[in-house]
Image 1 (tube, rainbow, N blue to C red):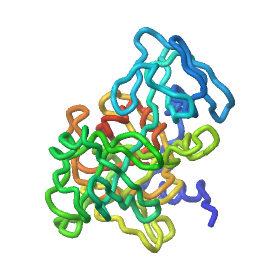
Image 2: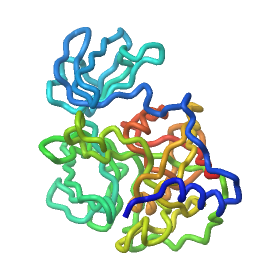
Image 3: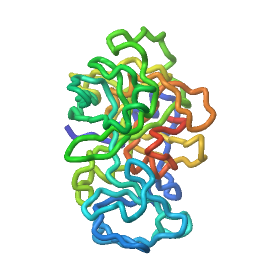
Image 4: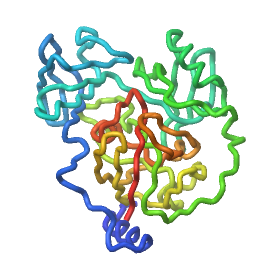
Length: 320
């Protein structure tokens, strides 16, 4: 069923008692400095990559950094890899930082076989297979001690042969399974401003990023969608611990990165039911906000100043 975005925005405004929800700000394009595609060639001073716009070339500065599961040198990268470039603030064609084969898996562990996990990432997303390599097992064990079915899991890593190599746990795992999440008290659903944690996900799952429109999508999955039409008949979301208003697909959010001060208006494009079970805090900068308030697409997250390997930033969300 087609979504009438303008009708949804008018309904949201009426429910929240304001004349209009936030309008996009052309001066605050969240992805103006972010480019994604497939690496074609790389040398000591520059790279070329296939993007939705065709072949694009970028040059390196002395301060350019590279990440592929850890800090690496440009010589560790290979043609064919999925790469995301954040450009220098002063020049779009100069690479400030590059990430290769970024991956993340967030959800509930459904199966485990030795060091391999199958994670349920939500009712509207495919299950993801993740492997915890030996070199990451110590770090993972500190923050995710229960790698068993029924427990929450959230880690950043890299794609390898269609599976995620989970390298960095981005939160501390609760010591109880999701079936025993404590009942949360009722929350006020009509606050216009909510503080909490913004995280990210990759709608494209690292595939065909030079031609897949999901790879460069701008928006946010939201953990408090309203009704069966938006969350769906198989909706598995939990009551969020942040006081989030119920919204619909097509609503617009103004999201502010409290660590950098950068903000932008992004549309609600998907359900984030898996994140509704997390009631954690982000340690990126000082904040008392608990709970996940938005799951941004990868490019939106980076565009708002987030470090994907950190997994989150403290954020303020405004609706209406």
